[in-house]
Amino acid sequence: MIFRPTVESDLDRLLPLIVTDPAGSLTAQTYRDRLSSGEYRPGWTWIAEDAADRTPLALAVWWGDADEAQPGALDGVFVHESVRSDAERTALAAELLTAAHTAYAGAGLETAPEYHFFLPGDWHDRPDTVAAVAWRREAARRAGLPVSLERLRYEWTPQAGLPEPSGRLLFGAEPDDEVFVDLFRRALVGTLDTDSRKEAERVGAEAQARDDVAFYRDNMLGDRSWWRIARTPDGERVGFGLPSRNHAFPVVGYLGVLPEHRGRGYADEILADITRVLVSATDPERVRADTDLTNAPMAAAFERVGYLNNARRLVLSAH
Image (tube, rainbow, N blue to C red):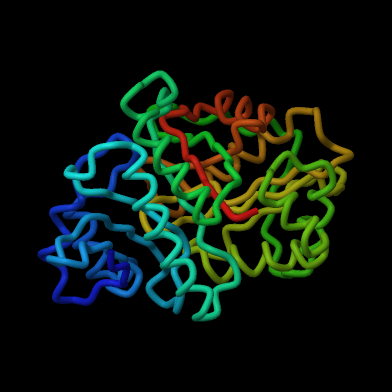
């Protein structure tokens, strides 16, 4: 078996491998579109070929920002229908992912990119989806992505409406990044956000707070002027909200309530303000947001403000 990154001339050979599958939403047309935008690249698309006749048998597609040198996430893994058993599919996909991870590490990528599955909200009740995820998850585990995190995906549409401001909190812009660094650092105490907690444990709260501010300022497409600090009427800082957007939709970038102010319903009000900012700035058809499956308070806040859970995202990572 040959495992290698594709080249431009492989396009017509690899597209037939991208078939409708319950484990994801990637289509051949989506691949073409993102190839044109630079989010997919031949060098980030790996193929497994039969060594004897060069028949394409498996495909792995990584996504990344158009201006980045390395991929950011694995979007899909496909194995040709001629590879019939789950055991064979798993083994072939694991070898393909391992070969790519080894190459990415050699090119300077410290950690293998996460594998993201975009799934229906009820995917655990769909046997075909469970089966399609299972062999891919095992392949990813063998290739160095053993940690699993499930996130709820929420969506707000204008039909849901928005609650009027209660007056309990006042919201204002803050141009000083250092203020947000301090707020991010303080909000890490007791956070239920798995990624933030793990990174803070790895690099320290101060470094993680600075990384968060830099990420939302420099990598997300939302305007820095949208960021808001929430205060009580007497001026005490309660939390903050970062309305933003990605390549496709306006999003709830980040919402933080300081530990001493939790349990008072402030997350609802900050979330509503984030949504109002996005409505004013972008006139959106929908606003999207994610939260960890285990973050029950945040999930409840989304539902109270009118967001609907319409999908889940399963993330497999190295640690």
